[in-house]
Length: 407
Image 1 (cartoon, rainbow, N blue to C red):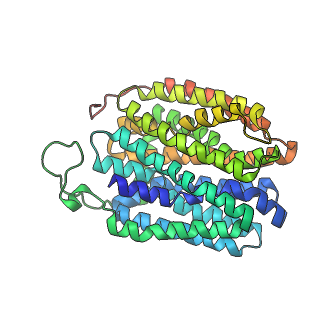
Image 2 (image 1 turned 180 degrees about the vertical axis):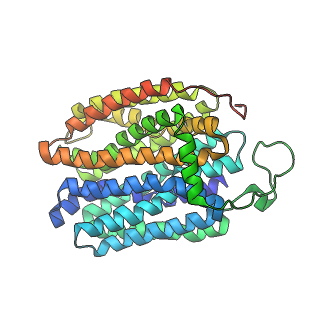
Image 3 (image 1 turned 30 degrees about the vertical axis):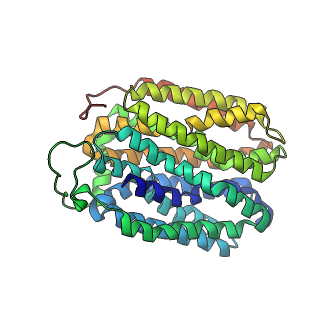
C-alpha cells in the first residue's frame, strides 16, 4: 500500500514541477507580467491547500481510491486545457483553479490518511517516504520538462504533465485500497485481529469544518499553521516558483537551473526519509526548530551564490537546502496526530492549507518584487527572517501524551 501510494504521488508530481518553468515563456509569448503569472500560481497553491481538509474528509466518506482517481483526472484536464489558452483569466482558471483543486485532493493529506489507516508503528518513517514521493516526481519530471520547454516551447510540457497524471488513474483504480480490512489485514504494528472497516462518514464538509473549529480553539493548531505557512512560503512559493527565473536573471541556462532544482529533489528524498526516522525517536518540536533555523540561514546566503554558472558554494546550498526541503512534514504530521487523534489527517489538511496560502502569497509577492525592483534579493532575505521566526514558534508548542509509543 505504501508503494502504491508512493508511485501515485510520483506520477502526479509533474504539475508541481512546471510553474517555475512557465514564468519566462508566458511572459515572452503573451506579455503578461510576472506578478500576474505569479498570481495564477498563487491561486493554484492556495486551492491546493484549502482543498486538502475537505479531500481528507471525502476519503473517509467515499474512499481513498475514488477521490484520488477523480483528482488525477481533474489535474490532467486542467493541464491539457492550458494548451488552448489565449488570455490570463484562462491561465488562472485552468492552472490555478482546476489543477489547484485536483492537486489539493492529492496533497499531503492523502499521505497522512494512508499512514493513519495502514500503520501503527513506523508512521514517521512511512510519512517521510511518502512525502519524498513528491520530490521523486520532481526529480523525474523537472529535467525533462525544462528540456521540453527550452527546445519545444511550453505547450508540449503541459501536455506531458496531463498525460502523466491521467496515466496513473488505472494504476490507482486497480491497486489502491481504502482500508486494511479490504484485504483482510490489520494495520502494520497493530495488536490483535484485523479491525472491521468503519462505516463511511457522511457530511464530509461539515466534518472538515467541525475539525477546524475544534482545533482552532487550541494554541498548538495556530503555531503549527503559522510555522507551516512559513514552510510553504520558503519552499513551494519561493524556491520552486522563482528559483529558475532568478537564476536565469543571472544568465544561468534554464536547463541548468531546473537541473539544480531536480538535485534538490534527490537530497530532499534523503532528508525527508531521515526526518521520518528521527521523528519516531526525538521531540518533533525540536526537530522543527532545527529545520527552520537551518533553512533560514541557507536562504540568507542564496543571493550571494547566484551566478551564470554552477560553482561549489551553489552546490553546497543545493545539498544543504535539499536535505531540509520538506523535512518539516513528518514532525508536523506527528504533532497533529499527538494533539488531534482521529481527526489528525483533517486537521493536518487545514495546517497544509496554511502552508499553501503562505506559498501562494510569496509566489505572487515574489513576482511583484521582481517586476518592481528587477531582483529577487529582498524576497530571499525576507524568507530567511520568516524561517527564524518559525523556529521560535516551533519551540513553544506544548507537548501531549502520545497514544502510540514510539519505536
